Image (cartoon, rainbow, N blue to C red):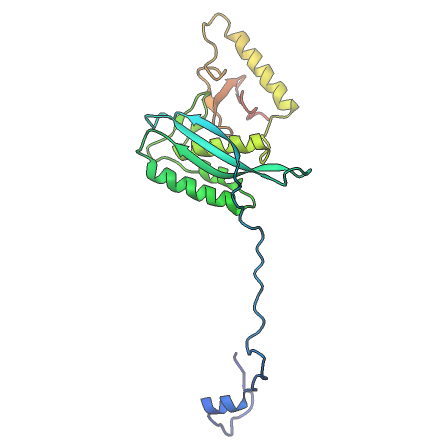
Length: 237
């Protein structure tokens, strides 16, 4: 703290540590000199594992691994028997014959399981896993969707599971977008009559571009406008 002196100094004295001790008020007997300690409030208690869990197992076969990966997500039933009953992930396991990624997969599943058991909102994990990119490049899965890494596909599985148990709501095109998609699809198919395979395995044109919104190869150019036949994203509004 800075004190500005406006008057002329006519004298001074030095205060020693002994003087400070003599002038400080002594704490009363039975009372602590420190102030009251802050109370730590736990927002949610970590979940304990019940004897029985329900869950789903998902199989993925990315081109970056020789063998398929089997992802098991077990759920705990919260508030069972009440109107607030719901499921939430409790633990995750990933099994595969391929031992190349064993170390980091075990570490990832243990960290994810710890986050599940901590409680609270866990939906942020989907976005975090989706944002992991492989320096060697990603790949397209069946249906034409671009996957930036193996970790991102694990995030895809988690997202699908959260949709199934109701923790996430799947975004769907509105009525206007659905109508636009159907019109564009019908118009494209009418122009492609006579060709042997106007659509690929995902039901989209073989020459479709990748949509910047849903990352699926389903965007076509018709009448000078780029329109996605999967999510309805259009540059023309």
